[in-house]
Length: 244
Image 1: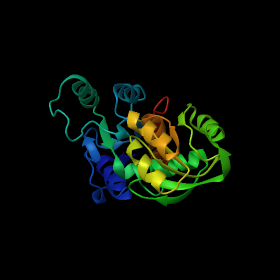
Image 2 (image 1 turned 180 degrees about the vertical axis):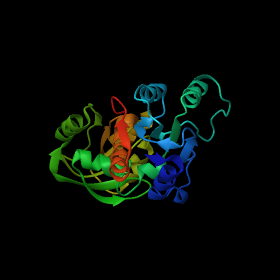
Image 3 (image 1 turned 120 degrees about the horizontal axis):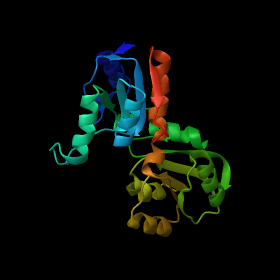
Image 4 (image 1 turned 45 degrees about the vertical axis):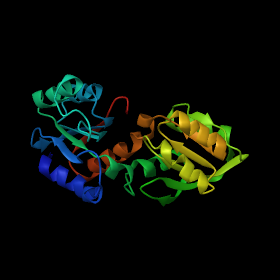
């Protein structure tokens, strides 16, 4: 068991949330019970995840995508009303960490995705991460590697180079970086979402482009953070079922 304020303070400091200018509140978003024994972790605070938390009698939920975002309608209606009502009715706390969880050097989404894919990380910035494959691969072979590791077929735009050795990536909705990455002479770029213009840029710059889905690309940071919290505190941590 850990007290809510102790858990929040620890994760806030671990992820260094004060050093990020984000477009959502990082940390405690909804206050519930003060003693935490069981924590559910997942990518987004959607109704499915909250219902899972109720099902396992969780005291708190920790996610990457919380309930409050700048520029959204601030009224508590519809889906947001239902999600908040679920948390408050069952006295479940909600913790959310966005950019701080993307770029953390140990538990961040970008670092953890590299580990899952077997990519050697060389550089981590607030724009993207970059590194190298252990050995050069044909684009189709790396696409298959992604499918095997993530259990999801990527959307793939074939590049001009015969093989891929260097790669950059940024989890989530980060397709705008593809032109910047291509200008660095990197062979391939991987991200979570795609727009129509991104396909044209990839084709015209010749970079290999892989798109795996926003949620899929960001499963692994919150999972790693949850495992760390379980090992450090007397805390049962349960990943969302299925992890999403």
